[in-house]
Structures are given as C-alpha cells and as structure tokens.
Length: 320
Ligand code: TXA
Ligand code: MG
Image 1 (tube, helix red, strand yellow):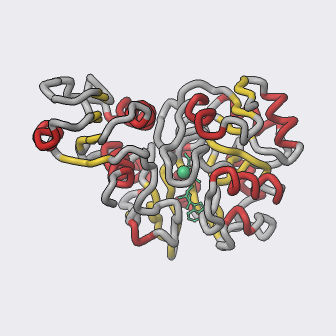
Image 2: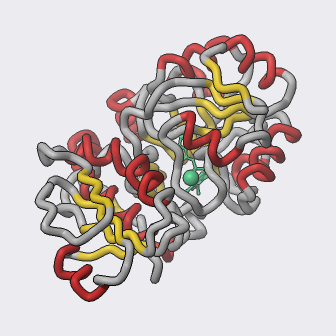
C-alpha cells in the first residue's frame, strides 16, 4: 500500500534508504530519489517506464547549493535564479563531474531548480543530498497536480506520496539552457517567456519537436490523456459534426453551454491565464476518467501562460 501522508520524517527515512517518494512542488508532483543513489534513480525510471535518454531535474533547497552541482554559473543564469528561485524555473548548466550520468543521460549539462513548496523545501533542508524528480506520472501521460493523481498512477508501486495539497501553478517549470552564452528556452512552462525576457532581454525559443535531443521530454505526444483529444479554434463548430458521440470540452473562460457536450471544463471563469494553467491538468484528469468518446480542447490566447497551455494541449492531441 502507498502511504499518503504529510509525515516528512517518514519521507526522509525512505529516501535515506534509497527508496523513492512522490513529493509536492508548486508546479506538479515529482517522483523523487537521492541523486547519488543508483538504486533510487533506476527505480524512478522503472516506475515511470521512462527511457534512460531522458534526463532528470535536480532539486535543491537554496541557491548556495548550486556550487555542488554545476561547474559554470553564467551571469544571466544568476540573474534568473535571483529573480525566480525558489520557483518554477529550471536552469540547464554545465555539470560537475560528480553528478551521475544516469541523472543527465550522459550529457555534460544538468538541469537544476529550487522548488517553491514549503513541505518539499523543508524536506530538502533535512536531507544530505539533492533530489532528482521527474513529474510523477507514467512516461507520456498527464502530469499529476494532486496526491490523488499520483496515487491513481502508482498505487502499490511506490511506498509514499508526501501530501502537499493541490499544486499552485499546475504546469511544469520553464526550462532555460545556455548555448554560446545565449539563453535558450527548451520548455515552455509556468513562468512565461515575457516574464523571463523582463529579466534578461530577448530569449531564443527552441520549444519545438525537433529539439527532442536537447530536452528529450519534449516528445511530440506527451502529457496525453487516454481519450482521443482534439485541439480546435471553435469547439461549438467542431462538435456539430459529432452529435452521436460522448464529448467533453475544455476551454478558457467561456461558460456558454449551448454546446451539445456531456461535460464542460472552464479553466478560468474570470479569464485569468494563471488560474487556467493551475486547473489544466486536473481538468484533463477529470475528463479522461469519464469514459468519453473524445475530448475537445479549445485553443487559448497565445500570450503569456496561454502559450504554455497551448503547448501542452498540442502535445496532448491525438494526431500529433
Ligand atoms: O516542474 C517541473 O519541472 C517538474 C517538478 C517535479 O519539478 N519536473 C519535471 O520533470 O517536469 P520531467 O522529468 O517531467 O521533465 C524534465 C525535463 C525533460 O524534458 C528533460 O528532457 C529536461 O527536463 N532536461 C533534464 N535535464 C536536461 C538537460 N541536461 N538538458 C536539457 N534538458 C534537460
Ligand atoms: Mg514530465
């Protein structure tokens, strides 16, 4: 049986024992293990059915600890860390030789962040090692934003979910790397491009399918429900052709339900993209559990976090 509990000392005991524990963060729940324990890291990959070419993010509790992880800390990276840590920004930097190849998929860089969740910060402070933590979902499926989501995936295969409530941001961290001293965005996430550019100026964006070798998590079909999912401009228009189907609709703020659908998920009635992002995965989990014939998602405004939401919806859709 998987324990779902707020008991940090139990989590410490398991992690010190080279086991894995699901942990809350402000973005999504992670499946965590000691970065220096080959046993724990192999278990993370095995539980998630994740391919070894896909590297993991290292979680630390303060910026000071980065010295033990990276060999270079460029000026722009420092500015970003100062602006956003603790928070939903992951930096990809040159790694120290002591960071195991299993964590970095053999690359000479390592992804690192300071998560902004009181329970997990307190856990990290009490451990003598950083935690590697990919999102706590089977490879390719919707990320978990509550302990219940994690438990539905990994009941009986992991010993514990550390309870930390619903994830505030609800969408993964934004990943930034550096190529020839230039900042490059590898994954859209819960800090918008605009917010990053306010700190370091114009950002190069490589959040494309083609960059799979750079951020291998960015495979085309990812974050995907089991139910066939379509991304459209206008849900009402789209579903007119499918009157005989059980349809669930996911949209931004328009509550108007002239829609002939079985279930409607409106992510932010007041039209706030931050609120919408925080509700995205929970809404997809609900829709996916309704045994629908199809999920129809409506494109979000392509600004700020709307870009990150659209990115995840594109990856969730059937034909991608
Ligand atoms: O919000 C988050 O980032 C969550 C929470 C738990 O912290 N974690 C998360 O981990 O989303 P995961 O494993 O699902 O996604 C990690 C992403 C992958 O796309 C991976 O390819 C990329 O980070 N990544 C890790 N190390 C990298 C590296 N050295 N270079 C480029 N990309 C890297
Ligand atoms: Mg993931």
